[in-house]
Length: 411
Image 1 (tube, rainbow, N blue to C red):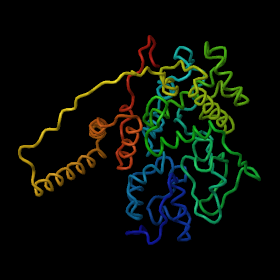
Image 2 (cartoon, helix red, strand yellow):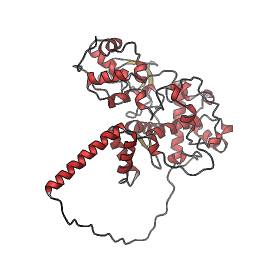
Image 3 (tube, rainbow, N blue to C red):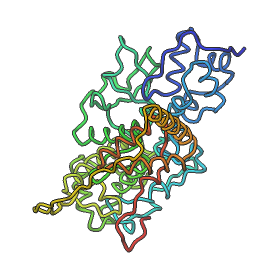
Image 4 (cartoon, rainbow, N blue to C red):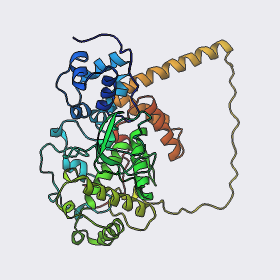
């Protein structure tokens, strides 16, 4: 029988926690199994933990929101479906296009150096970043018996190498939230991530937390960042003989990493095992570090975003500017009028924010208006952070500005 009203006891979800992890911790408070909580309290029977973390039924989320008081905007990002279209185009694999997601952009290599048929997915259910071999990874320093810990959603995807807090490699494990963790090896490898690896994890964490990433040239939308990173991973798998002028750069990257697994030449990233995926992510971290230092050349249409800004010539003279005095109002407003006007401003802003949360076109129009006051990339990034904190999702196309003219299609 389904209960009504609020749960008397329920811990708040932790930042980045997966939906299945949070529900398991709630079920444990009442000495229930996950299946019993779903069937008898939430009226949803037979859902697995992976289905909860993938694309839970909207009716289930509405019931959880009513039972816990946690708003829907907080519940949706606890599953992969809540990250569409930022992280993946659509929760439905039939609506995810491998060529569009992976080959639309280019970073290291020009588009004519890419063989689109070499690493095409073998399964019709391909989705970006969703591994065919389900994995659960956690930070050994985060999993402590004395404190609360949870299974992060991002730990189930081959998207990061280490913990952004402790800068330690995430290790494969089988875990029950806050109760038990069984590491894949007897003693988990707690080696620290390298500088380039930690920097890459920081950029990805910034995309997930803020919705934008501050690169060398400018800030880009999280959706652009995830597609750039996935494109870079595919370019790193290009055979050296087919890379043309970029072959020396590819050899340098893989020499620093140590080895390039043979399977990456013919197998899609999502279909590799975690060891090969980790090697590819390490190579991407090295490539981004070398691009930022100007050591290797980015020949793709979007690679310049990862390169340092070119030096500029600054005028050394002095200009005298005459600033006109501000105009004076002929009819200054009284205190009562000022209070009324400010109340009208606040109510108008609240109405605009509410409309922007529901309508992407309104969100972009409001952001365009607010961005007029931004003079630096840092100011624009702070503005994007404010929009994300208010629950306003900006469209991916908002940050895709015109690229340098080229004779070839961007792919």
